[in-house]
Length: 198
Picture 1: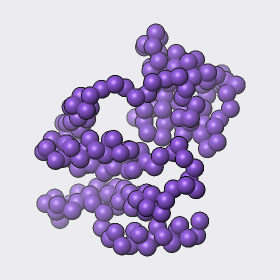
Picture 2: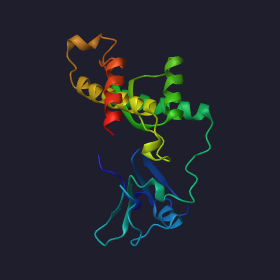
Picture 3: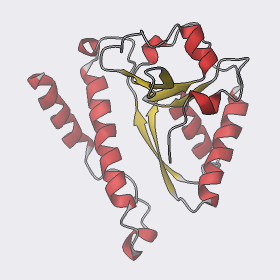
Picture 4: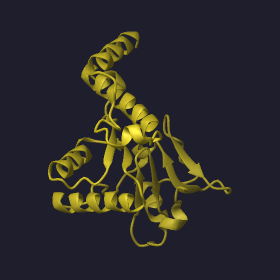
């Protein structure tokens, strides 16, 4: 699968279009202009404005969401609309034969949507969520609890990816399939050790 570029999103040239893929976003030409992003815009620290062969931004911003200005990225949908849209998306995965999905870079709102689908029996797949800490604050201000949570989710994601490829008979009826085998205590110890080492 290939990441779309501004040319694909330019199907709508009268409005800004933003395709969100967690750590990467893609803007159409209208949105690039509205944000003031052009060939002379420097890459933000730790990020990249991907350019085409002519040196023009192709719309892909890697870890460069800080450059998005003047766009209302918070679409105004009701919680019911968001729940229905998420459920329909997950059902398409099931129709394609997937039983476990990973959703990277989720925040509290998205986690809550998954939890509500699960609580109401509407979650059709196993979902592995990678929590994305609030990047509006410097990393130095993250609490030890934030770091433990991030480390726990990193380990859970790794184990789920390893286990998901082992679809043999012993996993088929195991309710723990796709869940972390690392104890909370082990995760806390590792996070505290990491925190002390900087």
